[in-house]
Length: 256
Image (cartoon, rainbow, N blue to C red; front, side):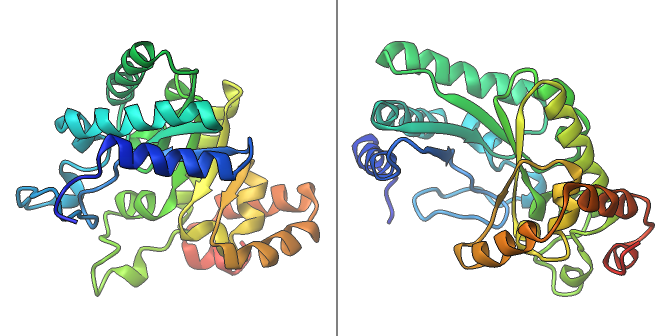
């Protein structure tokens, strides 16, 4: 569509989803475009380095009308279920505070119920500052696809580099470990979203690192659940310890 969805259109969708989940939590990620993600209704200026440009929450803060429209719709729908809000591409606490302030302003206007607010951990700066961010965020979701490309400085869409941008690289795993440690220090939970969570070779490592939730494709759920049931926590923790001590992704895959 060439026009942005209206508040009423978004509200109807969020309300229906909230009701369909019958009191179970539903996380709504705010508008996440820029880089490899585009929408027809926004004619964004060309950027030389779009993956390092205005994307995710940066774009939301640059286009406050769009952002406020979505947030109002989410907050109105929050009365019909257990909705949570998640901001993408947070690089520092200032961005999170700016976005959260808009939520609280709108919540007061609408007299809406409180909602949990989480953030995506997709850039190394956020992972390194996880302990600080966790004091103000309610939960984390680690976006392993972007975290991998930013950590390794390899465009995951690049025809030559895509195969080398390995999400089991020890540098990526160490940032995941640091994120989990920072979150748990403040009693906050951490999920994984991205391709990594559905990979059988990664599951024991992620469990061993203390990740609380895996967001995976529906088709992968039975296999991953069956795999986890065969593992002990001690086994997973030892596997994670071995992986963190590796020098390369190949060593991680070989079992340390």
